[in-house]
Structures are given as C-alpha cells and as structure tokens.
Image 1 (cartoon, one colour):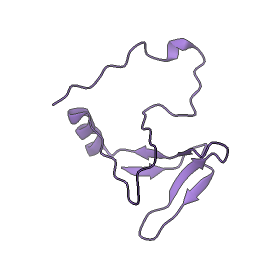
Image 2 (cartoon, one colour):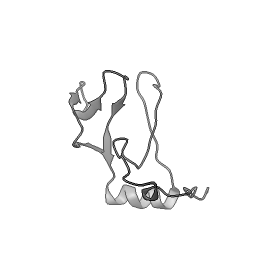
Image 3 (cartoon, one colour):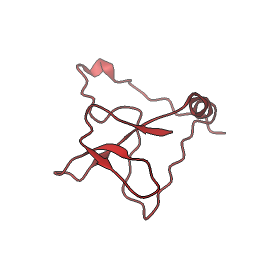
Image 4 (tube, one colour):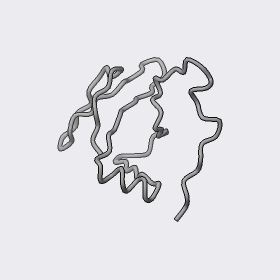
Length: 90
C-alpha cells in the first residue's frame, strides 16, 4: 500500500529512510489521519483473505482503521448501511 495525498491533508511527516506521509493533523484533538491506497494485487489479497496487516515502529498508539473517510458527513442516514457484514474467517 502507498500513502496518498487527500483534500483534507494539512501536513507532511518525514523520517529518514521513509517516504513522506501526507496527513491531516488536528491540533485540538491530537488526531492524525492518513490515507492509503491498495494496489490491484493487494485489493485481490484483501478480497480473498479479508485482512490488512498494520505494523508500527516505536510503540503502538491508539489506532482506528476504516474504509470510510473520517471527514465524510452523510447527507442522510440512508447513506450508511444498516449492518456491516463481517468477513468470512479462514
């Protein structure tokens, strides 16, 4: 997966031996949001296994992963599914 720029990004994190990471940093809440894009091969693997692996270096901060943008504001309740189907466990 690669990190991608997005409309709400307002900062870029950099570190030695790492690619720049565009993100939205909220100084009021401490929340940092980044957006990632899967390659076609990764999408096929996610579809097949239902899994994404997340690796941290230097500690584990509180984390949330979602396919829905945290900046998305639905116009109506109908835009959200009533139930989210759990992936089949293998």
